Image (cartoon, rainbow, N blue to C red):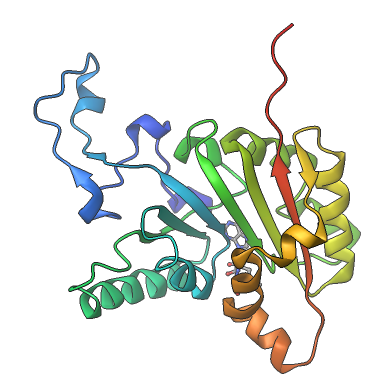
Length: 236
Ligand code: SAM
């Protein structure tokens, strides 16, 4: 449960170096007023792609070689699943040591319903994936859904203007719920079907997620919806 989860106080205090060792830079020459922060190693770039509730990481492993210049992060609440993905990343890095592939992908244990802004700065992420989130069918469980007015405001906060939230599910009711909540949010607009169809990320999330494969095997339907983060309006 949450009390064993650790969170950085703010993105400034998050040490990403164990997650992305190849992107870590030494900062000996940097002077910083806050010594605690200055002791934290920096990365040459920030995480830009987040897979929320990444499960066994199928999407991450498919996306990582496609976006070699960006850092990808899977967030997963289950300890054993997180460890599985972390071990797999280690193995994939070793197997690909000559090309350096998979150095840009990591997995972290976290409850993404809490503390997302502790990990990410405002306007940091360019893509967020919400793939086959737990449906929480019963009305009294709807508050456990990872899409809600409150959580959408957190996604809006950590997302860059023009960044995209990708959603996919086989549960039509949840699909409608996600569309309804993102469309009602002032920071997001739904992307047209034409644009979805040419987006390689849509193709990958349909075919490479573990759940996507399962739905395929069972002949189920996959409902996709993507939403673009608006620019914030200028201050009057
Ligand atoms: N995205 C993967 C896929 O498409 O194959 C996994 C989908 S699985 C149905 C949902 C995942 O979300 C589970 O692995 C679950 O542990 C994780 N999850 C649920 N609530 C979460 C939360 N609050 N924070 C992080 N992960 C969560």
